[in-house]
Length: 451
Image (cartoon, rainbow, N blue to C red; front, side):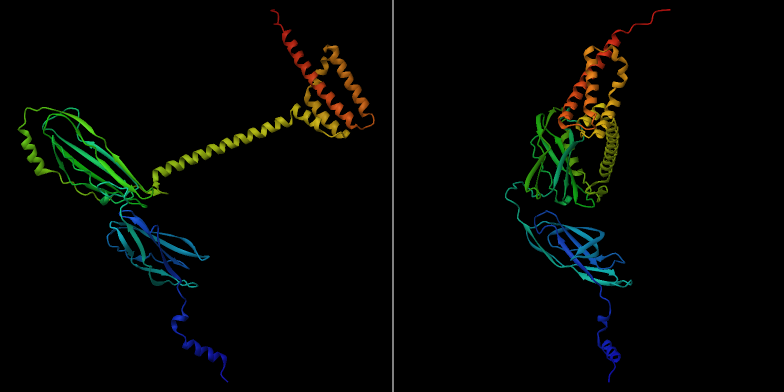
């Protein structure tokens, strides 16, 4: 008879070696924030690599290649913990921003990603090669509501101009330079359209090459285009420089926006030395400055979508506001505690408690004594001989009433109500008497006679 142990050894020999090894549970997910865009409208492609254990080395991945599109890589990976199908995974994310510039249907091809991670239950990492799933997207034609000369997509755009000299005292033969700066958010500087060339019959116009600045930050693409126009004034009179206008489409609001620099009026005075015009024209035609393309300039560090210094100011303001609120709440709490103590020891509080107290003799007497101690009546007793006869009679009636009501150690409901009513009248009369007594004493005060 064959032993079970021998059968088990035979099965282990027959099993493939790969099945005996622990499997690496690692996979990749591709996400797009939108699948239908306009030309020049950026969209974000995010790749997330998951593992059931941990990563022992940075990811090695290819750049994506898409025809008729600019690819802006943000290869700084972001680690984190993610939940998939109820299970926790360690993950690393990286993303690209895609700027398509031609309408049509396109596909983001699969990219190769190499990760190093140990299998579950082990500590030795293994290298694994993953492939992302292809993703399709559509680039729509320009919307009919856009009627500008140059199609341009951006989140927001600012346009400004600077002149190299004052425009107050110009004459024929003067040369002035006008620099137009277009600062666009959410796009590449290569997409910013050039400012229109001026056609003037009273001046010659010369345009230098534009200076492009890439001001992308850690979250978005931004760009600046600077263009310099040189004008040679050839006629005298009152003229105007036309405005520079920029028109763009905001895909998030679905609207067309337009900004302009405004028209500039000038007065050109005559110049007797007109022979200088020919020399200046030749010089400008031969020596127009070719502006270089600026190097990539990264913006300041951003925290939660804003520059770090703005975040620091807002955080400091929030801390100061929170500190002030805490102090205010502490003061309000201390004031409330003191106010409650004063209320609980006040004559009015104990008189209300006396009126609301039950008719059982011990409780009623206890509340009566508490009120009596705080009413000041005992202190005024020394002056009863000076009170009007009506007040003394009221006090005598109170003493008689106390004797009649309490000689059986009980108080009937009707008698108790009458007693509390008599107390209210007694308190009112006593408070009035105390006030009048204080006023009389104050009026009778005299200065001490001189020695």
